Length: 169
Image (tube, rainbow, N blue to C red; front, side, top):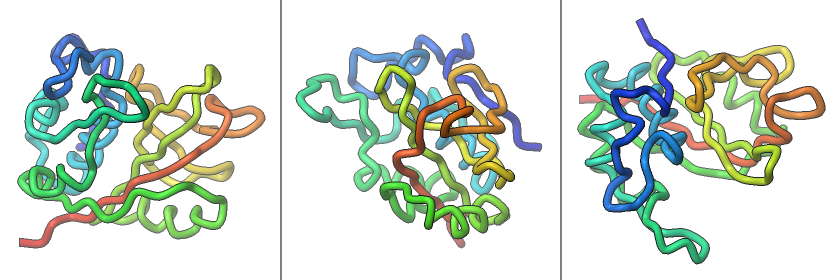
């Protein structure tokens, strides 16, 4: 059975992300969301602390701390966990029908990038389609988010997504 994970879980909250100065507890949302995809379609024995040590991270936008996941350079490492990185793209409402199919699939998974109310970026795991958009698991606290984005949503808007497919042997 798949379970919700939190980046603030004491088992890994204080684990460094790669060689950066950042820890999973404060900056591990993409890794923990990705881990939930792995647990859905890949290997169940994966944990965020393992990903933090094995994937590739880079600095972005003038931030010298290499805490941002390099999706392309991490492809080979992800395949060890039974998944293949498919794409990373900007989100538009036109994508939702396709992404609903991915969320319903037993062999595919998606994580969404959202804008926070303070203007930052955050990643969440797309668990299943909902009436008002994706129903997601938020790695910050492990909560279920039924209304992800928009006027009454937890976050102002969905800005991007990444999709994954089960690696066939």
